[in-house]
Image 1 (cartoon, rainbow, N blue to C red):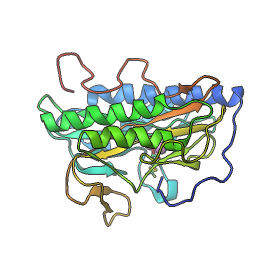
Image 2: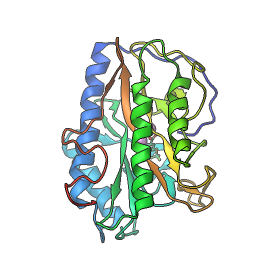
Image 3: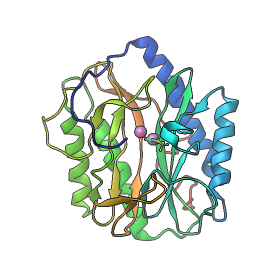
Image 4: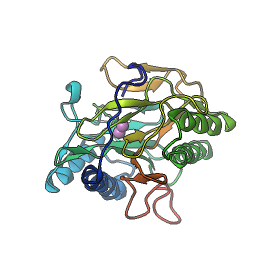
Length: 273
Ligand code: MF3
Ligand code: CO
Ligand code: CO
């Protein structure tokens, strides 16, 4: 979601039944990303991969939440190389050496499982691209490690910003994580930069995404004339990972974890993609 709505407002607290529903929706998002993984290869047309994702989602009794959301035309987002997020699948074909983020949000029984991962296309990903992807994954997991009752949203943003900037990368400011559940995007806004101890205090039962977008160059972005595709202004590479999580008594539950261990590429041992 865009980082335009101001802090606070009411953050919904969910009970065990809601967590069970989110477990199922999150598992479906993870299974969907697992399913598409072997097809993310040089020569694949993004529009075809998107159709496959939508078909898989329907077969499992869910709908693709992005389709028709604020006029968005497709079931998933596919963001290649310098595309930061909200890349629209279509006639674009994946090429050897590309890095691509696939972001899916199946809505199952009314609940949203929102997750994205990076993929290496083929076996010749540059060292710089691999490092960007690895650091971005670490940013997500470091952010998740902060989550427990009593911690703040600023604790999450702070560790992500620290880790990205220590690697001389930058954190995108214009998009953020978000509360989710029966509403796709709701409070809170989860910024991926910030200061320890600041922002809303986390409570057991909150459900939200963390989805850092990290650029190899500067953090500035622009949105193309299609009204969706966000790209880095300096054309540098950008990477993103996203999980949907729920705050528990002692920490958090990740609803969108891969059952296959496809957390960060390369997904096939000995290969890059
Ligand atoms: N899944 C994206 C997110 O992480 C939202 C995509 S909305 C769309 O919040 F309309 F662009 F699909
Ligand atoms: Co999201
Ligand atoms: Co998403």
